[in-house]
Length: 234
Image (cartoon, rainbow, N blue to C red; front, side, top):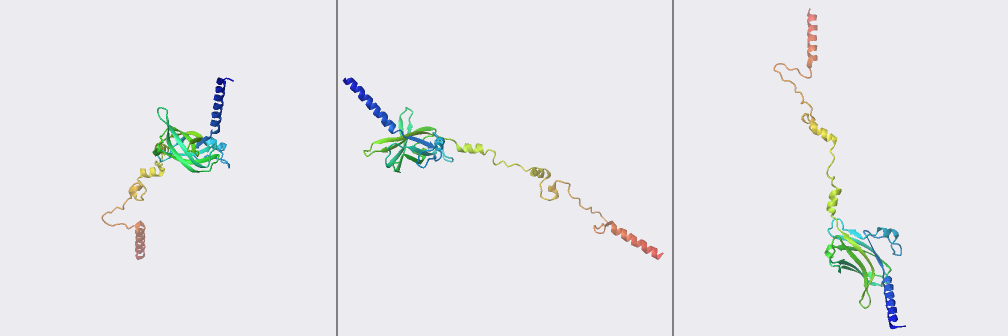
C-alpha cells in the first residue's frame, strides 16, 4: 500500500475519532421560565420539554434581572465543581465570556437542574442572545464541555404594562342615587337640601292670635254655651 493511501486512511481514522468524541459530549441544555418538570431519575419529561423556552423576560419590578431555570443532560461528568458559562457575541462575531457560575456540589450525575439569577450588573445586556455551556476541569486543569444551549434575554417595560392593564382603575362608577341627590341638592335632611319649597311659617298678624290648640272648634263651643245661657234667662 502506498504512503499516500496510508495517509488517507489515517486522516479518515482521525476524523472518525473526532466525530465520535463530539457525539460523546453532545449534552443538552433546556431553559425554563419556571422549574422544568423532571422524572424520578432526573430526566426531563415531555411536559418539561414543552415548557422549555429560548427566551426569558426580565422580572417584574426589576430593570435587568432574569431568572433562568436550567435543566441539562451531561455526558461523562465527574463529581466536583461544575461551571455554568454564558457567552455573548461581539459586533465582529467573536465570542466572549459574559458570566460564569460555579456549582461546587455536583455529584457526577447524568442530569442536573439549577436556578440562576442573571443580572445586568454581571454583564448581561437586554434583548441579547447568549450561548450556555456547562463545563468541567479535568485533573490536569483542562476544561472540557459537557452540554450546551442558548437563551435570549428579552426586556419589557413592566410599568407600562401595568398602566395599560389598570387604565380604568380608579374610575369609580357613579351611583345613580348620587346623581339624583346632586340634582335635588343633597340628603342632609333640612328643607334647603331636599330640593322642595321652603317650609311655610305661620303668619304673624297684629291683633288676636288663634292658638293652634284651640282653633275654630273652641270658638264654636263658646258661642254654643252663650246661646244656651240666653235661652235659660228668657
